[in-house]
Length: 63
Length: 402
Image (cartoon, rainbow over all chains, first blue to last red; front, side, top):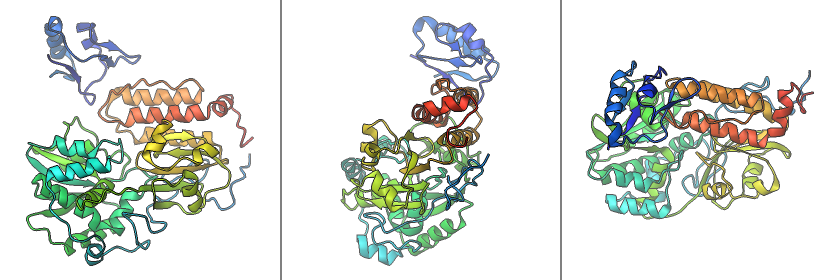
């Protein structure tokens, strides 16, 4: 099982990840991601890949 | 508005200006001989290799198993977050050994113990690092010291020149002198030629694919005792603030906080007390608190931090709220500024404090290092202690300076 990891040095709070993966990622009051549980279940693998690929800051990684 | 200052007070907090008082110099000197690591020390004088060996005997070559067991028995913990040293040693097994890094960054301006150990008993610190390097199969020991502390670097350099540790290279790595520069991954980053800021790092940290054993100066001094099979303890404290003699002292772990403060010449009536440094806990200077033993377990029993052993006595004037706000500004400015949630979350926490609204943790461990979360915890602790005064301040009044 992979996990969602955010590189906080790169993240600029675009919020695209939350739109692509709202089951795992919500946004705080400034639009930065909040990930209560970083584990990606099998059913969300493709959505997680999409979220990682579309992050404008290349800050979201799956490990 | 006139402020009636304590007559002898010309500076109060090490590294932090407050209420028109300039920042006090860092408490980097020894107040008196200690009980264990600093036993028989004369303040300002460095033990030579000969004197050191006369006191402690020659350093053996414990295996990693023996050293780990001894660290376990001593319940040796890292000075900052209190991570068990034995667990750190265990996590290194089976990895490619890189340098052993003695982290003497001591960016905490209210702490002086690491500098005092390096300038008084450098061979005890180096023995701990050498024993660790030998046990792990590492060939390099690096002592990280802020470049601005020339006198510390030259004392350690002289100590290195006195020694003969076959097969080992011991060097000094000059570093930055900021609050955050001593964070483990920030040290690794700057050793790689990067900025002295936290980086995403593996645990245990690696440098050029080799595992780094990085710990603070005190931990290595205690490992030198562990390597000799001596499972003895002591409390290493730095006292500052409203005291006549700010500096470092080493006492038996059962010594009370009150006794420690008295021997540093603390004011009779204190406004509050911070334990564990600027990231630490705000406590009332009540009899109950002053009667507590000045050690990690005893402070933990009341949910307070021991951290690197910094105790800061706060006077009744200037107002402790002014001190809390000055400390807040210092901690905010000390941030690396790399992570959005931290920058925004710490600023929002400061606003909560000024408005006397509950300080919320909007950072929630999002970020590369522990600084923002620890800062918010410290602000929450200050707010708990000073809730009534903060509410008065939020209305633009102050009980102390009205």
